[in-house]
Image (cartoon, rainbow, N blue to C red; front, top):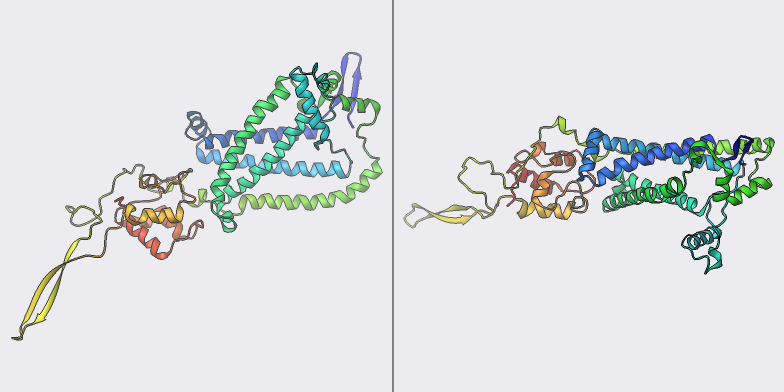
Length: 427
């Protein structure tokens, strides 16, 4: 039940949000802002502003860590919100005033007609709509946040745990989740800037989430039906203490079990696997080439004058026969060698297109579509080391069994290793 206070010297105010709700709002506001900042700089990584902010946060690894920490806070805040909602609904029996209904649709239409000045033509728009505890705008914002949190949670899990996800879902869901995650982030940030800022900070500065109170004039303007209910004594009223204690004995054990279950879910979300972002040793612990030209690397050979080519090299065979006189006769015949030099265009490139293009295409990260893109590497550095397959991170990852997206046969892996050891030729 809203509380009111009056003083001859001050305007009457009504309590709108208790301290716990204001703290919850601040925590969710902080986590959302941090997620938006650290997420958008990764989505638009080539922007100079993004590069400056990533550098200010200590690099991309620190940016990702901050993003993950803010995501954990958001999950914990959502869990707390659900527990509090259950208490208010079951124990205190507060009305579900945040649920949308037909009146909200009518209020939205009436507000539109009133704001654009059509009241003189349509009677519905002659006056502002009279709204209760929450306006149709506030309900739309709340449920948009609920929807956005659900989308970001599901897609965030798929990206945070790609190996586990790919065991049960097609590999294509990982880049799809990345696209949905980034798109929803842009939508959420724009909704806050364009809608929430106008409705709360520009139209008039609503300080209720900071002070917890609204003046009677503000209540009359924004929530006249709630004000009428408060004055009439019909607003939400707390049950008697005996009833509250009885309901608490039922709710608290249930809430404790649900809380443990949700905490276990969050813990699993965070620790279910060690993702590809951490399985590869940091670049500081590796000796890697910082620049690889987009031309074929000469093949290691004891005869450097030979040009690398896919044309079979000529060889010769010797036929030995016995003449009628009983002597041996040798005849040499030129032949063509069956083996050819392994190259990207000849065999390795088509193999990667067949097995790896689903995740490592042109959508971002490691791109195996072309020779030049493959030799650049991905976010974790260069993955192919010409002339040294044993220390190429791609080979190390497959042989250690830490890559579950594509399965390469021993013969295919050997072919890639031979290509690397031969100098990682393009043609």
